[in-house]
Length: 157
Image (tube, rainbow, N blue to C red; front, side, top):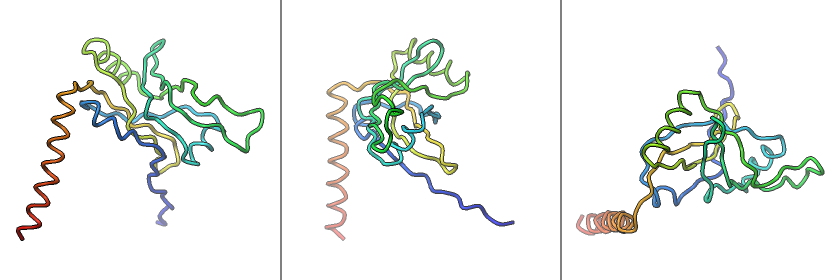
């Protein structure tokens, strides 16, 4: 059998501060409903998801405040850059996420926006709890110590 030309996973946007500001409990891959000009704009790679979050409205999960800039070649059919976008999840996943958010006070944070092997836009969504200032300092100390430990080990031999 001939192998298909599989495309590698192409990460378009990443929320790098999320792992520092939040303690991540669980991750879920969700599809994202985009219009044609949004897909083209996302493929250009100018998307930011750093200030965005996911929220439940009417039994569905929506991505709020994600910035997908307008596609320059589109004319009057362009999209609104910060409009809410529907996330595509199974009903069981939605119920699980909504339950954790409502009962345990957790937050839904996007970690990555990428195109999978089939060329579909996907969002890696994290169920997370916000860190306090002392937790952030502790994380920074651990990171610094691991760097220092690596330097010492290289210096010794």
